Every structure is written in structure tokens, then in C-alpha cells.
Length: 463
Image 1 (cartoon, rainbow, N blue to C red):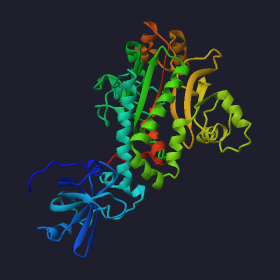
Image 2: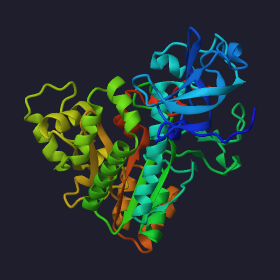
Image 3: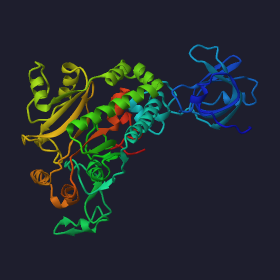
Image 4: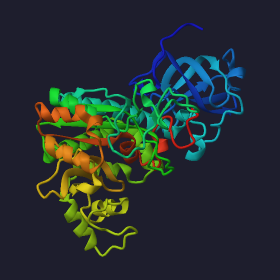
């Protein structure tokens, strides 16, 4: 076969006039055999739609091609012409077809519909399905949009370490990274001698890049991180994974109000970007995954973002007359049912909840003047609840030391973090947005395992 340059199907379907000698390559989604003609739906992943290939019995290898099963890989050369069939503008009348890779009858994606649970068991093949093709195209587009948002605003992209000796959240749910013999590690007075380990101390996979990001914010003013984070949490809920991606900006010379403003601009930007650039995939999610999805996103893009203190939110919930599964008490974290009630019933839109009790928040959050609350914020959105969490950071050296002591955090472990409060400290703030949680909101997918290419959950690291 004569060598031709491949044209992406996405580009092909946008043509404005017929074209000859067109070459496409992709995978068979379906094949229909009729009397004197056959049709193949071919998809290359560049877009949701497939191109219809029309096969004429006069082709040299017609008999072999029509036996190619769903999942087979083909190179097709032919003429792009207007289609007489409804629902499509163009079709490709094949002049030659090369079978690159065959697929036998055991190919798992023969049926049009499979459960998400089944597709998770074949994670190496699920990207070829309609749903996951749409999910991962959207994921790619939104990853680009994240960088575009910050780069347009002069933020520096910082790659914070994946291996760390610090537990940012203080929860201790870290995966350990070690080269020590797991059966017989070196010991010192019955304790494991971590000085014999590769890094000469206990290390693990990071739960957040925030602490290191704060070092860079005191040199470059505005920075962001975007990378994988890890939690060794034995949880099998639809919202938890052991490996997930976090977006964490930090802004210098900023307070909590500046932080909320950035969070609002960021979320609105990503929603608008998806609506403007991922229309085909969003249409699929709107029809098949969550009815009313596009209306939800368009409403958020235009919504007023309200602000309420944690104390005010507790009073609103207490006075609502609603019977919640979990009681509403000052000093306890808001549960998902509380967050959704605030956004869906009380405010009917997104809302920032600020100034949480200090005992339920991390040591690095700035103490308020009442010495009972800290300058924290959570952005809550309808149907999901919390989607962004952040705070103004505690920049005052003595107060930060006291907060660390209260929570049992040794100063020696974070002496470098304290140093930036000694030398050129400044007010600064930041937040974290879980990328997968954002994707769940934008797609309507209900399980975090279905918005990450290869989910890592308890008992699952096969692919």
C-alpha cells in the first residue's frame, strides 16, 4: 500500500468539502455487513465520533476485511464524500484497507454497554469505550487549562517532591519509602534504625506539595504545583483513592479574601473552558451520565459565589429544621450532607465557608484574633460539597511554633519551614483542588476510580 500521511478523524469530520486520497487509522468500533456493501465505524480517539467507512466488494481484500472483529486496527485510504445517511455529514468510501492488528471474538468490548465495575477490571482496554474516551479527553483538556490559567497570570510552576520526610496533614497516612530489609531491619534499642535507610530518615510518598510550595512563594510571589499525591488510607468509598492529583497554588502578600477570589476565578475558568472546548464529550455526559449536567455547569459559570463563616453556617443549619444524619455541632467538621444543604437549599449556589475552629484544622493555618478559629476556607458547590480547601498560612514565627507544639509536631522535623518565618516572612495563602474531584463534578461520574486512568485503591495496583 502506498504510504499516506494520517489524518485525525477529528480533523476529517470538520472538513468543509470532499477530499480524495484521505488516510485514516484507528480501531473498529462496529461492523455492519449488508448485501453488496459493508460499513465500519472507525475511531482513533481524537474525538468522540467515529467515521463511517464504506467497503465495496470490489476491493482486493474485501473478504478478509469484513471478518475483522470489533477492536481490530485498520489503515484506510479512500475518498471523503457527503453522506446520504442521517446523523453524519461525511463518510469515507474506502479504496484500500490494511489490517494492522486483528481482534478475535474474545475481545471484551463486543457489547455496546458494560458496567463501570466491569470496565475497571479491564483498565488496559477501557479507554477504547465511549465513556472513558470522553473522560480522558476531558481530563487531558482540563490539565492543559490548569497550566494555562496560572501561566496567563504569571505564576511559576513548581515540581515539588514525591518522596518526602514530612507529613503535611499530620494524619500519618503515608506510604513508606524504604530500602531496609522488611523482615530484619536494622534496629537501635528495639526501634528501627532509620539512619541506615537510603535517605537516613523515615520517608514516604507525599500527601501534599504545599509546604515546599510555601518555600517558593517567598522567592517568586505566585506559584502553583500540579502533581500526584498519595494517601495510605484503607478506604473503599467512591471518593477516595490511594493516588490522586492535586493542584495547589500559593500567593504571597495575600490574605484569606485574596485566596477566595483566586479560588473563584480558577474554578469558573475551568468550567468555562470545558464548556467552550469539550462540547462533544460534555454532550455525551449530559445524555448518558448526568441529566442536566450542562445546565449545572452553565449555572456555576454565571453564579454569584457567596461567603459565610463556619459559625454562621452552623447556625443556619441548626435553624433549618432539617433532620441530618450527623448532628450539627460547633467544633465538628461539616459533613457532606451539611455542605450540600448549604449550597442546594440555603444559598442555591456555590459558597465559601471560612474561619473554622482551630482544633479541626491543620497547624499551618493562620490564627484569627479570637484565638478560637483559623483563617481557613472551603469552597462548596451544589451536588458535590467541598471542591476546594485552603487557608491563609500562619506567617508569624512564635504563633506557628505554638501551633506545632499543640499538635505534637517536632520543630526539628520542620526547621526549614520555620526558617521562612524568621527570614523575610510575609502574609501568604493558598488552596488545594483535587483534580479527580473536579473531573467528577464536570463529568457527572460518581466514582473517583472512573476519572483516573489507572486507579490505585486498596488491593488494586495491577495495571
